[in-house]
Length: 422
Image (tube, rainbow, N blue to C red; front, side, top):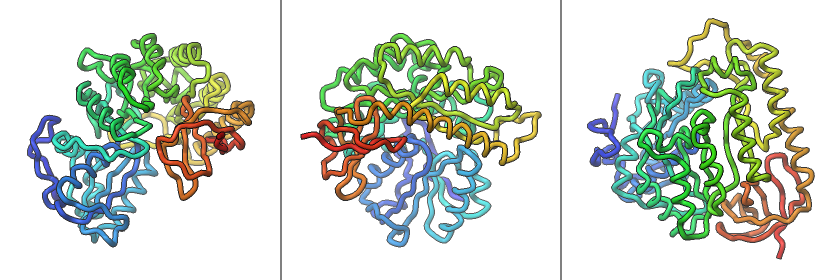
């Protein structure tokens, strides 16, 4: 077993040398999971580029393979282990959440070098370059204040550690100078930023809102429990033209009883108050939420309350996850539900959500909307975002950063097909 860079993994650590065996080598990287993981990979790439390494597109071209892992649910864990088994004969490095909490499972099937995520960030702080492109990821904090009874991520990432505002602004500025039109602020809980240092997210957004440049910022996932205490100034902060009118606010259940068992720290009424405040000031704001189905002890009545909440909420997107027991979480007295029950509840909730999407999207057809191109999908096709973060696929060869107007021609549930207006 090898663990790189463990001499000192503190945020302010000097270069611990995890990168030395990779310097000047051809490197292949696969990244799984959340935007925070993709932010770690972006930092990793910038470090390796400075050390003379070359990023390649396939495993067979590589001198070394790096897998940035996720283990948020059981299905993802199994996928990670299968992939590591396929690569066990390679010069293999593993980072991300999985080696922080399930190292034994990894070493049961392969013998990689572990790169603790903290050492990547510590080394990157001495580099500071950005790749540019259409989307830039800026990590604002690590860990969280919550104690959700189902979540393994807190064990992997630890308690909340907000990154300095000057460092965040510097990174945002680097992306804006590179012409990046979309900047994603990411953390395990974005709305918790600063609550360990006497600051708060509205202050950070106000700083970003005052920066020069042509860009918009997507604020990452926010926990209603940490939004409650900053709601009014947070809503006001979204008035800036540098902030997408988009909030990702996971509710997880429509039942207060289940929310309490989950340890979420808020009620359904709290959640609905937050959504109402954003919608009152920004009627067209995009609301995305998450739901867990099949949580231990979830009765038919509890599930019905989740179904009813989605009907009242009428969100633009619902991410539905089937509960799976994770290490270091629970335990719960109730037996886990059969997969068939969780699958059926997931199907019902997804079908109901998609019906709502169709009802929300129908009046938008043939509407002309402003957009900015953020991603190239393939030759002759790009993804653009409206000010409310609605995705619009345009079949046109446009560079990222291009701003214009499009008419929405086709509804694809999760995005629109648009035609550029001259």
